[in-house]
Length: 253
Image 1 (spheres, rainbow, N blue to C red):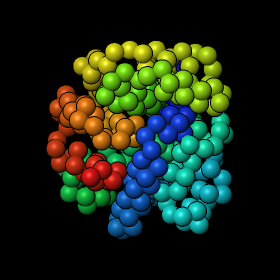
Image 2 (cartoon, one colour; image 1 turned 90 degrees about the vertical axis):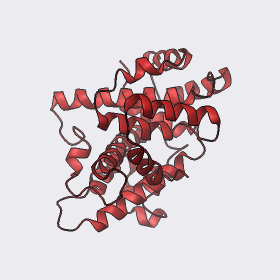
Image 3 (tube, rainbow, N blue to C red; image 1 turned 120 degrees about the vertical axis):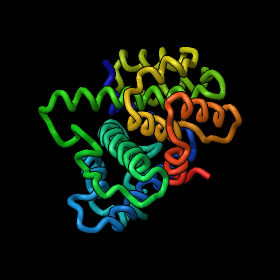
């Protein structure tokens, strides 16, 4: 079975949507600001996200401000880096998506921050080696995120052979095994079936994360993409206020 955490990192590094870097940066900067605004709480959500990527990013993660702001922790690596950082990027992205989703659901779009959200709650399993149930749940979540990104990429038509070759080439460069390459090729080749995908989503939190992950895969500059996102939110039952909060957090006009 593919390592879906690593696969998220590889897909982000492949840079299908040119705005991925700015969206990652916008999201992390928003979470950083919320962390500053939350007084009297234990470890901040931002600390958990940074902790998830420090191992793979080394000095840049130790002092992200020196690299041009908190957004640089993940954003500057999109399109670069190799096998040593893809897992860190994937883990950091999962933590980031969880944080955005919980803030959105907690505030229904009011943007006041989720004071009760801890780093451990935002990224279950990232810091708990040996917790097999948490690890399995996190891997299942990562698989959903990967499918969300691929589905969003298919929303304005089939992924053409040139784009497919580019993504598979990036997988090979990152050291993905044949099984992972075959799995991605199969998912990209499947007709888009939103109903079947939505049936795999088990909670409002997952729905919000899936919506946010979809925004990392596309530019949202075509009617087909906008219609797909609307269908996704309607099928998952996401409140308009939650969607608007996520859009704002990720820098979507």
